[in-house]
Structure formats: C-alpha cells, structure tokens
Image (cartoon, rainbow, N blue to C red; front, side, top):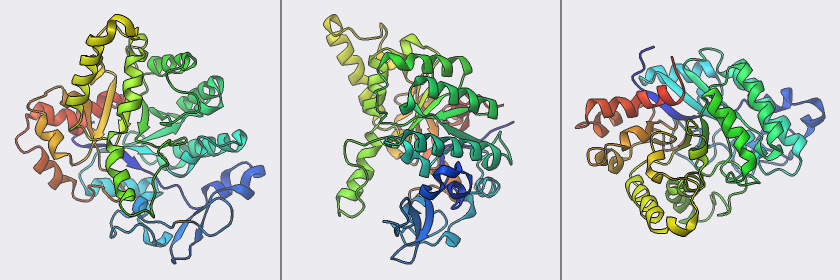
Length: 368
C-alpha cells in the first residue's frame, strides 16, 4: 500500500453502551456508562451519579471547542465507529491511523484488579472484533496491556491480542511498578520478538504525580496542556539510561503527542550527562543515549513549527518523528491536515518529509 500520510496519534471514544453490554455480568452494575449531566451534555459516569464533566475537549472534532456540554448525538460517529472514523480520515487525505483508548485507561491504578482487567479485556475484544474490522491495515488499534496485574497476566494478554491481529500495544505512563525494574524484561523481549511497538501517551494511564488535568483552575488548566508536551522526558530518559534498549536493541517505544522542538536540547543534555558522569554512575548502556532516538524511541508531532524548522539543522529529527492529527481532540489538525502539512513542510527535504508523514510509521508499525 502506498501510504502518503499516516496519523500516529488518533483517539477512540468507546461506544456509550460498550461496557454496560459487554463486561462480564458480575461487573455490569459498575460499568462506566454515559448519562446526562447538569449542563445538558452527556458524560461518562462510574457510579450512577451525574457525570462530573460532560463531553467536550476530548470529542469536539468538527464542532466548536468547548470544555464540556456536548450531547452524544452531537459528536461525530468517527469517535466510536471504525468505518466512520476511516471515512473522516479519507476526507482529510489520511491513509492510516494509530488509535489510542480513552475510557478504559482509568483501569490503571485501580484497587479492584479483577474489575480493571475486565475493562481492559472488554476494550481489547471490541477493538479488534468491531472498531478496526472495516480495515485492519488502515485502523491500527492499540491493545491495552494490564501491566499492573503482574508480568504473567500482561504477557498472556499480549499473546491473546496478537492472536486477534494486534500490531502494537498501549502501556500506561505511570505503572504501579516502574518500567526500570527487571521484571519487565520479559515484556520487552516479547514485544521485540513480535516486532510490535509499545506506545505511551503523554501522562495517560496510572496515577499522575502532578495531579492530572485540573479543568476548573484557571491558568493551571492550560498550564497542564503546555507542560504535558514535555512529559516524555522522564520515562524516556529512564528507559534509555537504565539500558532497556541496550538489552533489547530491536524494541521500539513511541510516546504520543509530545512534538519534537525540545528534542535537540534533550538529546544533547543526555549525551553530556552520560559522558560527564559515566565513570561512577553505572549507566545501563555503553553507547551514547542519543543513539536510541529514531531507532528505539519515537514521538508523534502535530503542528510544531519549531520542530519542523529544526529538521534542517538536526536531520536525525526526521527519523524520530511521526506525524499525527490528534482526532477528535480539541487541538486536532482535522479536517485541515493538508493545509498544515503544506505549511510545515514547505522547504523540507522530500526524504525527511516522507519519513515524518508516513515512512516512519510504516516502519515502526510494520505496515504493508
């Protein structure tokens, strides 16, 4: 298939009745469901009380940007229907998409592990049996891995979803046990052997130590939007410095919605600290940390003018970046991606342009 544009970061908003109808029966009374909120919009609730916030920023593609207040029948069907999602992408000249989960991400960090696992597995079943079924080559759904349930459970779900056609997997940014611990080597090996990338998304999944998105605190709400673009520095630096990629040289990790204008300073700083402190620090790698970029570590980018301008000065950035739309969120480039692409890549080397827009995604996700 001749891919021209791939979005490596799109999102699913799961159907309003998915968990009510498809969770194991013993959990359905606690299933997340959509109810009417005080502002007249529809939102997700976990306790049969009115939702704390209704649909807005996370589902406003094709609508005006509102923090909340949308009814379910106002949002685009592409939020929750694979065929409609694909149709929306075709309208915008996008050939394939990588799809991140939304509601079941709350399973990470839950005290009730049985309920959490049921949420994850219900989503994974629906993802491959329903959402991506219209075209699994163009709809690349990320199966969720239950990393908080022990490595054996995570590996069992990894293998189960491989059997369903999974090309890649989602892992939470904040697991209960840090990814630097040796127990994860079995997971890294499995992903390396299968050739399936593992995908993070900013601060999604688990208990965010910063407190998460504070919608109702003026200034802090938008400060969070800014700072989350730098949220990959911590987990990715830890993975590189502790030698995960030295031990698993074919492992690929993508962190989504980070942009890449910050990468030259980060890369330079990692190498500087490595050279300065390697005499005593016992790093897990014997090569410069920057070598992992574009080989093991990748990020997705939107309309990052600074990053695109820097590609000419730092050509390796073209190997690290995967273009994305962030559909259907409030900062998404849809339905005007062609205009954004023309502006961002106006003077770019054609080879670098092709890598960012499609080729890197083809290689990372092993697309045909």
